[in-house]
Image 1 (cartoon, one colour):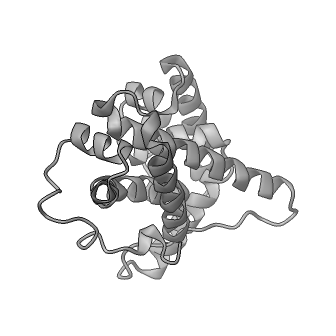
Image 2 (cartoon, rainbow, N blue to C red):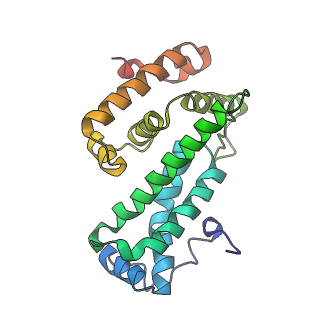
Length: 210
């Protein structure tokens, strides 16, 4: 592709006469290979995927790369969607798979290197001061220390405000597994944050205590 999907203006990719179609109609359009359906799908679901990916990865550029891969997979696999009314879940499944793969890749890169893992915490708003930016970098450095599953569970629950049941559904794991993973992530993050005076002043981890 000559132009990344994530660089396309959302206001231009879909005609206004198509934006109000239902998810079922949209899924059928994708399955049929209708060109209009590609633009509408991006317009409707890209903000969701980009926001979730940026919060989980701490990097806008990485989130854009992941979104590109997610939607290419969605478009290529659209014909495999047997229940058109579940298009949103279909898109989510590719996003979660992509996030899992990226977090595993980061973890492996950290294990194979003797250097501190790169912390990619880009801020969407340039008005944030230097101190806040430094705190955000340090927080994402702590997230990098979690296992991929624990980090994704924590991100979806705490950063995306999903319920335990929603996290279990999109990650295709049991509710009990989500609870264990979340408790483990919160316990470790709480210890690490309390050991950092700057972060401890910002984050109230008392509700994470188990």
